[in-house]
Image (tube, rainbow, N blue to C red; front, top):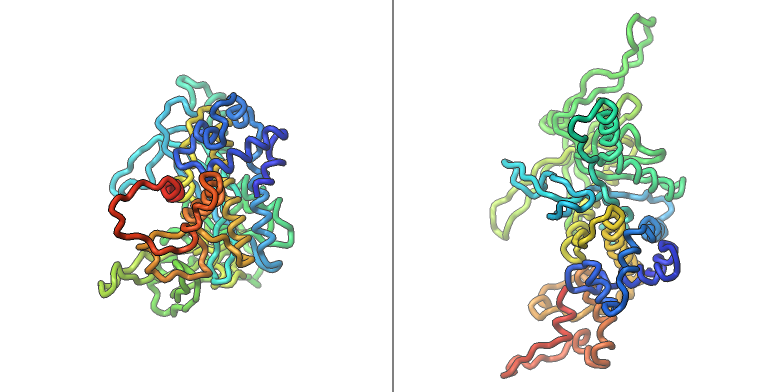
Length: 469
């Protein structure tokens, strides 16, 4: 999959450096700064300026890398299946005052009763669903874009400067970034395949729903008190004076629909959290939402909260209900629910990219470097999973490093996907085993009876390197 770096670079030497960096990101056991990536690739005693110019002088195009991942996902989909895309943004904390795109933002991990502010950078990501035989799907990143806010207007700005500032705020908001990437994904995808975008409540607004590209559907969360209307009744009487009726009678809000005992609950099967669940839902078809306008007939779905127990024998707890809106009323409810449940995979991608690979931790300042270097890290993560999913579809995943003894008691599904940390350990084993000592790593993949009564244990360098992930 590293061959995708060749058309993404400006020349042969840039492509070689880009391939080295993408492989070094997956092998680096430390913070993935550009200095550490150069050292992992063995270039610490050579001139380092060309490595920095690869990003600061815009000598790579990360969109080409993500296009390769998107084409792999499209090739794995059946001809009649739509392309499911999850979109969301994430915050990478930064402390520097001269880093391009850093500003004060609300901390999403802060408590609900107190709004905390942190300095950080904002990135927009889109991940495509790779369906699996079990009903689950693995989300593969296909878009990763730096999404900074517009800078503040200067003090004492005149009317012209204030107008330019207001226009910059409209062009540099998250909705504008999302619509631009939606249009790009729609352009790459074949015309006969429908694209379904899934977002959270922050993207469910009039800007997104009214400006969707052609042959696209949006599924997102909606407020429980959203104002809905039935379709206007077709009048056979003579035309009366005044404006034509565009909205019908008020429809019940999603919360009122949930509490209405006259409307029965329906049971729908969907895969989530490792197994198939039975969800209780209510739906309201052929309604209009004020924010989506009169040209978008939508469907509202209410999902009853699922019960769960913190431990066996504990009392039954319940989550909050969910309220969804879909811009395609003809989409079956089972598929609508399953597509939105797959959206959680983008949160898993954020966790892996920031904790295991350190996306956004590189110490660069310029606008080009902050746009290209984190995108390269996410592209390496995406291509790693594309390679793993291709092997998984063929049924020949490479043997991983033997897990610790305390993990072997748990019965694992042989058809389940490995974790990202397991893929990184396997890759490091393949790259480092023969380089350190040929023939000495067989006990990592083949179980041997350990000597549990060794009187003098000594640190094991290969074991420490392969377990550093």
